[in-house]
Length: 66
Image (tube, rainbow, N blue to C red; front, side, top):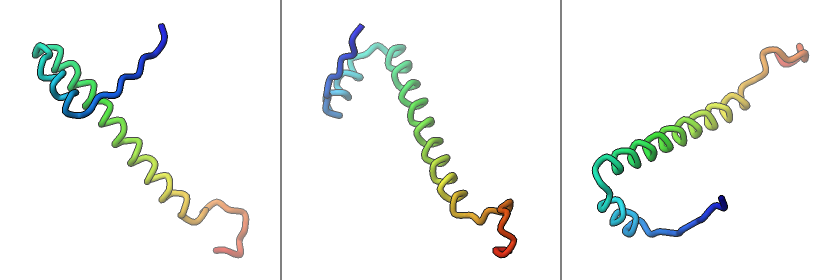
């Protein structure tokens, strides 16, 4: 099945969500919350990795830097 991309304004999305039955709205919001949590963790991991890259290499073979 081909992918379909539809551009929707935040206002239109809110209107569409308002029309959903409660159980479907809960499902959509749970999926959005999961995606946000993943994005937050990815951001934390990325910033932590960048910080880690700036640390001196304790296991480097160059003894003059110690």
